[in-house]
Length: 122
Ligand code: 5GP
Ligand code: ZN
Image (cartoon, rainbow, N blue to C red):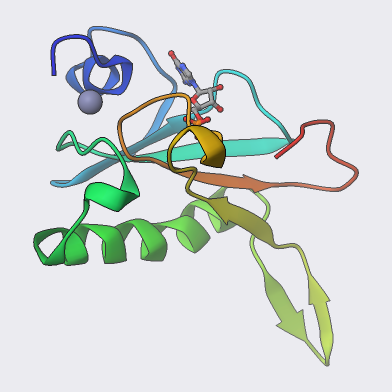
């Protein structure tokens, strides 16, 4: 998609702080973080919204969800449980459409975490 900012980030024509790449996905730091850790997981294929996904996207969506806790762990906001005590953790968020608060119409998952309180509205 010519005019899509995340397609340009996938292509590398707009810079980003990239933290992951595989055959289907990239991940990078959100430019306007709502919390100490704010990552975006983005499919390389242009799909505008979650609502436009179908069965063909099931594997890609599964990869996005499975990548989230790995990246959270790598960036210091992994969830852990030991001796009944839970620590850390993160929020995963996919905004869809105007009422969902979506600003960039290329599917993406936010991974938001770090010690609270968070400044952002997410
Ligand atoms: P949405 O509201 O669409 O779910 O979230 C879009 C997110 O993309 C926002 O959190 C915004 O800060 C982030 N964003 C928008 N443009 C850029 C950019 O050029 N680079 C990076 N790294 N993040 C961006
Ligand atoms: Zn795109």
